[in-house]
Length: 80
Image (cartoon, rainbow, N blue to C red; front, side, top):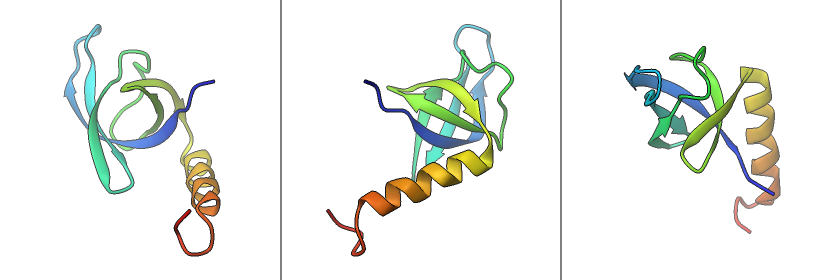
């Protein structure tokens, strides 16, 4: 089983076909992510990221639903 987390593409830093990179924000954290597998994704799009590689593009509504589900797992106090 793998865990993919949705993130928002904020910037494309390298647009070469094999090493397409971008800055992706996950809540309050931004990381550099390989975007080679999602060639149509651009700034403002949401992607699912697994171990530093965007593996699919998703709609904003789906990303927000995942964020809500993850928040509900942490319990009412926001802590486990």
